[in-house]
Amino acid sequence: MCMFPASHAAQASRPSVEKREKMKYLSLIFFMSLLPQYAGKSLSGDGSHPKTFEDIKNEIAGYSDIAKAIIDLAVHGKAQNRSYERLAVFADTVGPRLSGLKNLDAAIKYMFSALQKDGLENVHLEPVKVPHWERGEEFAMMLEPRNHSIAILGLGSSVATPPEGITAEVIVVASFDELHRRAQEAKGKIVVYNQPFVSYGETVRYRSQGAVEAAKVGAVASLIRSIASFSIDSPHTGWQSYQSGIPRIPTACISVEDAEMMSRMSLRGTKIVVYLKMGARTYPDSPSFNTVAEIVGNKYPEQIVLVSGHLDSWDVGQGAMDDGGGAFISWEALSLIKDLGLRPKRTLRMVLWTGEEQGGVGAEQYYQLHKENISNFDIVMESDEGTFKPSGLAFTGNAKARDIIREIMALLLPINITDVFDNADGTDINYWMRDGVPGASLRDDLSKYFWFHHSQGDTMTVQDPNQMNLCAAVWTVVSYVIADMEEMLPRDSKGALNK
Image (cartoon, rainbow, N blue to C red; front, side):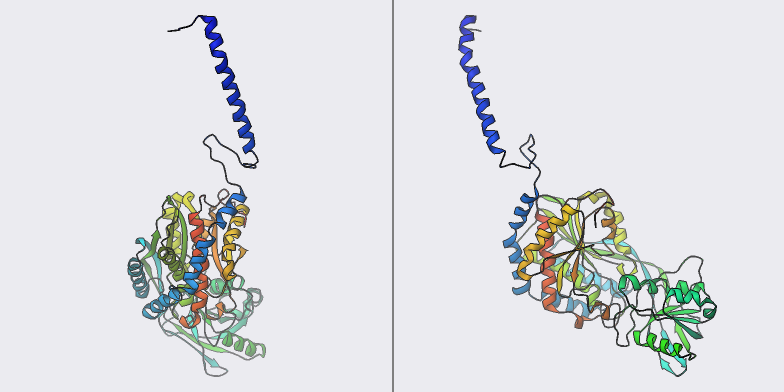
């Protein structure tokens, strides 16, 4: 009900209109005064705005004290040498762990129990199928020009020789090109490859394809100079693959020394005859498991920062370097965070892969099982190139993500490990990186890695506790900060990462 005549009502409302206009003006002045503060930021209706890179740098800098606490605990504190000591007990107790063999089963059971005792969360095993190949009896002897025992290690998936073995003349070649040029000479012979070691990535094709190329020219077997930069009469094994429609011939690796010796003999025109016997067998795929443990995120538990190494190894040495070190610094990352009472916003998940040595078969099955949630994977990290003195982190991701990683690595200045390199490397994380998930791998001193790789020399003697401490500190700082930042790392569309 109106209490005033119309003319009086208009006069009464005028001060209210003027007051509202004044308030609007003052609000505008206030808003304009804020513009310098929010320069470069897109204000939204709910008061939130995307972060600028300067915001992100400041956020990361705020982790300086936590990074120092992690470094102090891992390198100088109560956790000093822990990853080394844990690995030593494991390697000495379980030994080598080839897919399909009982030692791998024992390794998985050991880790499952150890992770539970460590108080980690969601410790569980995810079933996979892995290849099952056994080398059996192996023997090689040079018969001409003199008797000489040749050290060999059969290559993974190789077929056996006939029960009586193979006796044949040798042809030595330095490359596939030379083999093809001398194809007529190779028929009925054992091909010995004496290819120079250029790099693992380039030279490994002789191991993986040597038997196929030799079989194409009618050879009866192939012996491949170990893919190693150095050896002390020690063969280095690894996986090889046959090709459909090409005869499957026995294949093994030999030491650098024996390959070079036979090459010298051959260049002198000396006839070389070798007797080879191999009892290798391939069985149906065996059940196995990827081993998983977590620290569950307190704000975005569905989002995942994944750290990893592979638990399987070859059936020689102890698998301490490849990849016991990577597996155990991944465990150590979770332990250090737990010990400090930290709980990141995202879930930090450790996966110990199985079947990596056969081409990442366990990781591929994990990817197939979890890829429907790919948008929740913030970064995938794998350490599988040793845990020697670290120099930084190799990263695959777009330019914006790389800039963020550089800022995170700056937190490791107290131990002078701050470099960011191109192209993360890891058989088990490649599936995710191909689909656009940022990836990282530990970069360390590889100068002696291939001295021991896939050989009897891969034992705890190779490992250094101080270097493992540094590796663990890098792995932990990087994974924790990424897991605890407010926003996930930026990424491009599927398959569009700028490497």
